[in-house]
Length: 580
Ligand code: PEP
Ligand code: MG
Image (cartoon, rainbow, N blue to C red):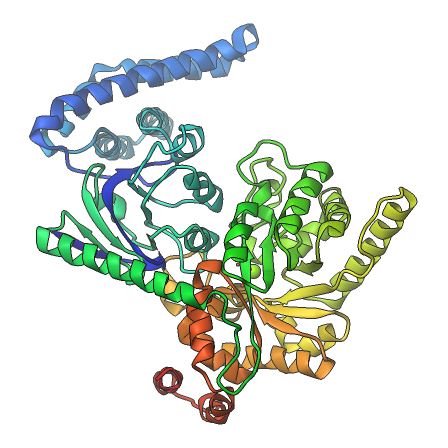
């Protein structure tokens, strides 16, 4: 039995068979091939080589007569290298001698050849090793594709193709994760990723037990391995014994019973012991999740992430399609829905190519969210029009992400005025009094929250990005996710500044980052003055339970000692003490 640790992101326990999926461009995984499976692996290698040759031929045919001479020569060279018996024989030998998978055997061969070429004094001849590398990558790509790349396998497979399996990948994009939804997978594991990456957020909202940031899961786990995934603790057991299986089955039952017990709180009003009302709302990524929000009796949708509508498709949705989808979302909720304008960029890329083209060297600090929208009015204006048109179907609020300057707000107001005028001129109905708010998720906006508060109808604290930008930790980088700390004094101070700014300007302040859905932080947030929490609907009842058992006046008395605590360990202890 092998135990691995990573960052648990989707709570719950999954027990199932592993399915390793590779994507072209991933690091080449090494896995052991059992003696009995060697012939099958050699056959797989042979098919990979044949497919690579076929792809070279079809590349040549594509150009037909117009093929430039140098390209024809290159294809010819690559074809000859591919058919070179040495490449094939040596790779077969490595597979046999080392009992490794074909892709990895090719990698070993490539390294050996590189060494030989590096020793050739003639720079021209030495540079020819690049051709061998490219050919090898082509075969590796063919092998991976024959296993079905994540994109192919996730998007083009029939529903439920991975029924009950636990997907293992180097990384999954948020778009991949949405595609996973239609397959009845029981969990997923990735080498990369952090706890507030959008992939992790989706895992939580889709209620898939998941662990990210495993670093080397691909090297250690194989398709077919029996796995236990503990999404809460971030633990994986591969090849578990009967005792562990039994223990985890019982724990899984317990978790299910606990969440069933919480169902009794569904209708309870969310009021603290000292009689203060706390609003609990939900975050939704996909329109169908609104149903869960309604079922959990949330006070509305505090964050609807519209950008997910733009993923996994060739063409971006036009105004009409957006109007239809937003209208459906509004109709399916009898309470208010806060529609967040597009937060594309960084880890949320779209297939239409529009966003990828504008990627800078540091996407999280680049043209993302409101910046991208103000830069691309062809994208933003139809989006705003669709939201305003849909607003007749329900109580709509509009919220912009990643605000950092007042000029952005001024531009936004001008655009909204233009959109309203156009709609009026066209005789389209819309709600003229939609509250306009912004996410406070850039430290600059938190520090200057008072300035923004006076211009807006509400604020919502996005702790996922606020923590990323304040602590300078890329939220999708598994190497630094150990630094993610919602209790860092800087974060508590910034959260307090925003809540106070809202109070002074007499506007509501909500929190929609993942911190709002973590019951361990509920009381410290209540003490800080937060009275509106928006979270993944599956966490709502647990947070409600905390509120029902909290006396906010007492919590407020404990706050000064927390805020003045200089030592992180002691600060954490004091926050933990609030929960006792
Ligand atoms: C946040 O940053 O906290 C947030 C809620 O937005 P997102 O996670 O979509 O960036
Ligand atoms: Mg954000």
